[in-house]
Amino acid sequence: MMCLFSQGWHQSRYRTRRVGFYLLIVGSVLASGIGVMPSMAQRSDSWGFGGDFFKTLPSRVALVADKGRLGESGEVMLGVVVNLAEGWKTYWRNPGDSGIPPIFDWSSSNNMEVTEMLWPAPERFDLPDDSSFGYKNEVLFPVRVVAPDINEPMDVALTLSYGVCREVCVPLEDKARLSIPPGPPNSSMAAADIQTALRLVPGEKDTTSGLVLDYVGLKPKGNALAIGLQSEGGVDVGPYHLVVEAVDIPSVYFGVPVVEAQEQDKVQFRIPVDRSEGATSLEGKTITITVREGRRALSETVQVGYSQANE
Image (cartoon, rainbow, N blue to C red; front, side):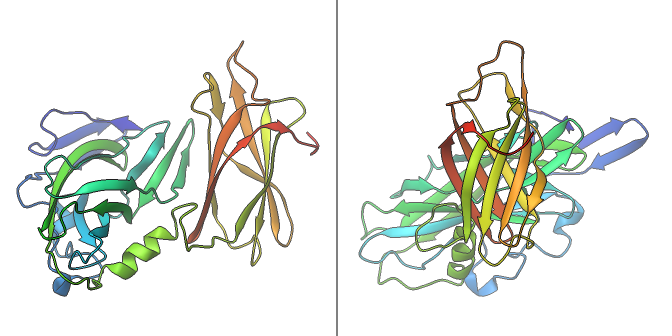
């Protein structure tokens, strides 16, 4: 995977020469006007991004909200929509071996405080010697916000720094704005889309994934993890996208998960563990496991023991 970095990300053209072929990425994304959400009455399946847009640009960003007015609480659920051209992807908070994690800058907003940033569980994109975590086609990041003064409009201004990748990774910066006036709350056309995105946020209230982490343990030689998962409705729905994180354990690399055993409602994964010489053992350490399967997701932080499964 090749990454391009430029100080003038959106004011330049990108050309990359690779062995055996040429890839030309043409872009001229001007900060003024890009990413401004059309009115809800104009919303389409492509969030108004259709037509010739993706002939020149790999992505576009928009802001939506679950209500058209603030109401008495001033609480609003925003959605940051990243719509991607075919074949392109963008990244999770942990991008994996390559890629660029998104950075959300709300500092230009007025009468708005972010209370919680939510992350839909990602898909895995595995290549030889490179695994990344993120999203293709489209992703909606839910964001809980509140207006300190419910008698004034909430003016939301976002600057999103993020990366999109195909054969190359391109860093981008888009701007989006949205204003929500005071008054009695009313549901917007985007409310259903935000609820759909929330079902992919592990642990989110009022959502039931039907996925249960059964066990986590090291294989006897310590060179692999065994992870068991139970799934309501059967385990053959798939595919499963499983990410293991151990941020505070240096010199440990988790390989690509492989399905090792499968029954009617259970599946066991084997995840290779590559530790540098002298690296700390995983036994007794804490790791976080995030799983996405279809429109379901879970994430749990667990302590690693030893598995009774055969090596």
